[in-house]
Length: 85
Figure 1: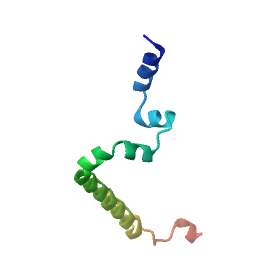
Figure 2 (figure 1 turned 135 degrees about the vertical axis):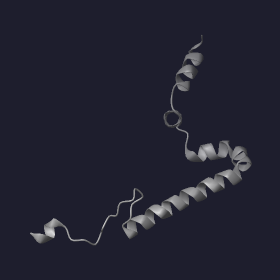
Figure 3 (figure 1 turned 30 degrees about the vertical axis):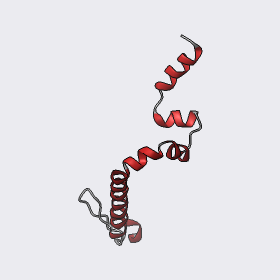
Figure 4 (figure 1 turned 90 degrees about the vertical axis):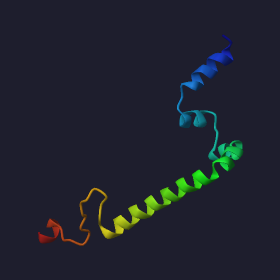
């Protein structure tokens, strides 16, 4: 095996984030390199982005309303035991 083969085998063992960091590949680099694949999957990606935005809005709404997703209620307006002292 040649040294490059050893290097490539090592790089294959890394997770994607570590590999990008090691090779100094930015998000912009990835978007440029995979532009055609993004165009092919544009509809699916747009739906996923929309779902993420909806989830973010629900989380924000829950924080302001004091409700939690696990069925509990966080009463942001109640007095605590510190107030009684």
